[in-house]
Length: 271
Ligand code: MN
Ligand code: MN
Image 1 (tube, protein in one colour):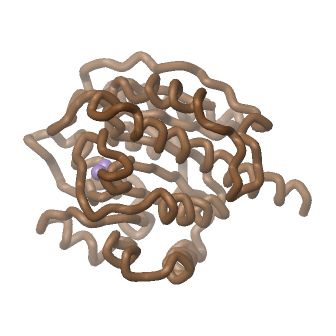
Image 2: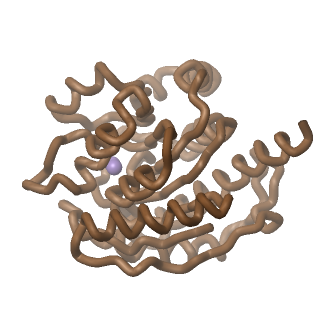
């Protein structure tokens, strides 16, 4: 069940991610639907687009509305797919579920206690999530932009930096990821689109150089989706900062993720 959350009130650099849900929908209507990686066609999946949620200027209220909606969708046995919006939307999504580990694809750690006095901000979203699930339940991938406060936390979470991903072969990176995911069951997956290099995804709230290629992102996502993905979100696309490339990348990430999740679902029906 796709839920758009057109919310970007705490964006600190380039705002406009409130326009991302419609931009990603438009892009998704104009790319091919067959995943060659998964050998699944997204057209064959049962997908419902619930449209956009009503949001308010109040972060706590918006996060609570996301929580309520995601909880209801998950309770109905569907997989919530949240289209942000800024990264703060993940907090509502994670709070809606119980007992999940959280896999975050992001250039940043988002582990600051507060940013500009805001406790509920895109720059603090993983800190608030860590208070909900515990630091040991967080896996970060593509990390390359941290502050000193966050580095302290980095000793207590699992993460794969963008630099390690650049240095290793894809196969080696997948091995490392498999080890980190070993023993984890249910996952909440969040993709902050700034995990990609700005060359591929320039229209994001806080672009950060030295990022991932679409190939490595999709390869890692495919591995992650071998676990039980309970919900997924896509955040931080600011569509007015490019001519549509970033929204297309987001639509691709969305389609591919859904196909990877379907692969696992089909296998579990057979066994
Ligand atoms: Mn983020
Ligand atoms: Mn980020």
